Image 1: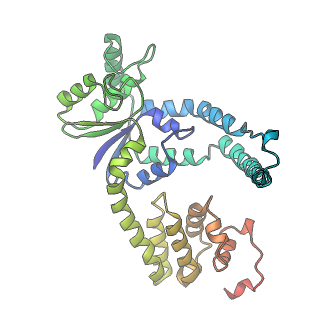
Image 2: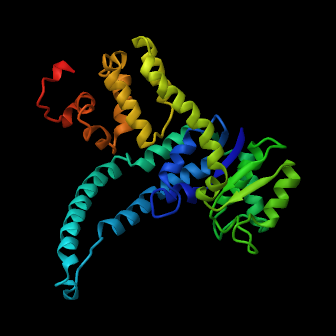
Image 3: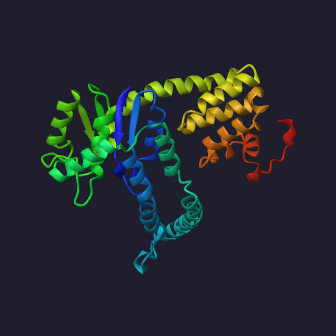
Length: 329
């Protein structure tokens, strides 16, 4: 496995406007402990926790205050009526989305919350130690990077990685913090830190200013291996043989955090056409799995006449009226 560190600013971007995408983080989750060893420090966890509310509040205010006004000069054009009708639909969707956000923000159930928490659980945690704190304090007092005025948090992260990552092992380091970035080239780590890592660890540090930049180089290799195994497990759903095997395959699929729309549709088709899955669709583990992969994408099932039966089993509280006798399915 390859070592990886993601700085606090990248995690916090998931609560705001940024190029760091939630779906990309979901794909990364499936590779942690398989292809990558993600290191997370106590400092990063605490920074994310204490800054989460402020980030969410700022992003939500900007989104909630969206207003589009049409001046009189727009009137009289044939496109104007269509524009006004579309805008009315947009405002209705905006209102409904804000209602959901109000609840999930308060309960810390945003998709960003779920993904961050899941990755933190999978990561290898580096806890504060007296040695790390003393080394960070010394680094800061000497003026050696990384560090900001009145804060040695970056130094704590750096000393944590120096202490935890084995000598001779490379690390992918992802941060947009200027304390780590070279003044000569905005895409490289500063030369002092690069030389220090090389001399002390006997390995290389590969620096990226965004997760997107990292994925542009590595996502294809990450996804290929993961997707092949994921698709193999999905295909097994159509020939499970018995209830026990069905539970086992669903358990393996439950370890994945992301499924494409196509994969989700195939998984649902398997439930609708395989007695060994349909027969246990109400079991807690099976029901939880299907509810999880369909949350926010219910239309995949809801818009297919055959799969509406499945929708009613998975989401009885949102039941769709079906003309035919449901017991005949």
